[in-house]
Image 1: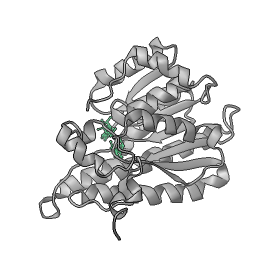
Image 2: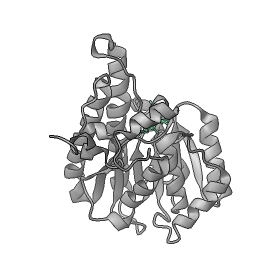
Image 3: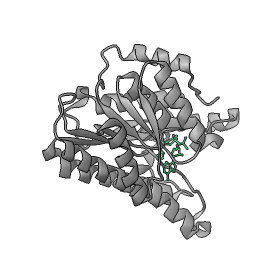
Length: 284
Ligand code: NAD
């Protein structure tokens, strides 16, 4: 299969999915928004009426292309460089977003990476890099979002004071040999999300998670980019197709809109049934 590439024409077409503009008037920050799932979340949020802050750390030209497509489709976006694992850079990013768009209503804490190795070969740097981006990065971005929601107070654009979506993984649940740093980080994201939801719900800040299964993006290219690899991957997916970033972008719009206003502290698994553990269907 191929990477699902976006274009200006597709950005324009996406608007047709959101005739009621459920995020109109809101500002959404998406981290790691210039690739894969984050890009889809950013493009769908823009199509749903949000102004979008596109966070990136590498490939500025990709971030600029997304900003330009969103503008070409009649929306508003700007790109903001920050390494989400670096506290000072995250603080500066929020300052820059405030200067440009006044506030933030929605955070999609999506930035993440893998540094895979068998346990005996895994270096401390591989462990720390994954923990710092996947877990510390979500903590830092969520902390600043919660502070910003409370600083600016209620707005008429949404029932909640603010919404935070933590991008997790089916590996918050499924152990993953050879990827212990990644699975541990996503297990951490699950309890970070649940604890934040508990702590912030009384202030009408809604925190939820999305746990994607196998979505074809650059992060997992070897798992889907040859027919043999794709067939092996499909063995794990009862619904018998590999996911695409749009599957997650649509869900992120719903989870950050008032349509999900009573959804708090939940992880939405979007995995084609991977977590039904299909291999048990003929045994156990
Ligand atoms: P991707 O590699 O296409 O995108 C990851 C994004 O995160 C990129 O934009 C990258 O530049 C950014 N990023 C990495 N380190 C960063 C940092 N320090 N600061 C800011 N941004 C940084 O991968 P993806 O598949 O789109 O992954 C997005 C999220 O979805 C990740 O959290 C990943 O763990 C999660 N996820 C993906 C899948 C999948 O099958 N693709 C499955 C489960 C979970």
